[in-house]
Length: 163
Image 1 (cartoon, rainbow, N blue to C red):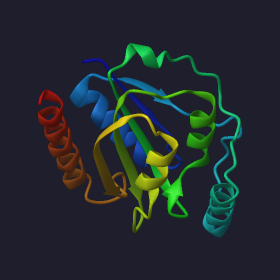
Image 2: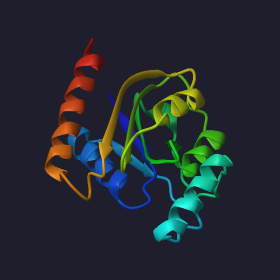
Image 3: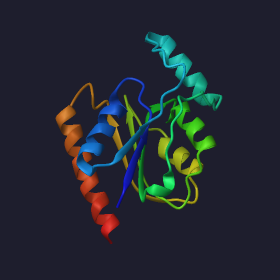
Image 4: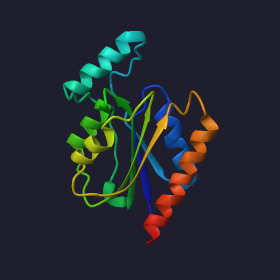
């Protein structure tokens, strides 16, 4: 089964998880990178990100070339912003039809996943969801524990996928 990891990472947490998944599953990777990729800090980071989520903004992304028809399983990852997914995924969902795929969702957060998976599933109707995984800041603390959580999740996905 050929798999693809699609993700956005603002501060490295989702990038780390995507790298773990890539290593474990030998998946291809598509990182969504906004054209305006400058880093914000402090409170301005939260106001900027929250505003983008609330307004359902679709930031312009660097060009990517992916044929989803080449893949059986797609992992999609995001940081949690204001209880939802990062705006880079809005752009991806608006520009790329994802239909009839097995989807595994993951998110990274600093205190709660909110309704991120429900919101992603609503944008990805017409697909089969085989798993969800939320991780508390894996790049910053409990990294070994978070890695083990990813390994166990991948094992469970493999069992579900085999049946």
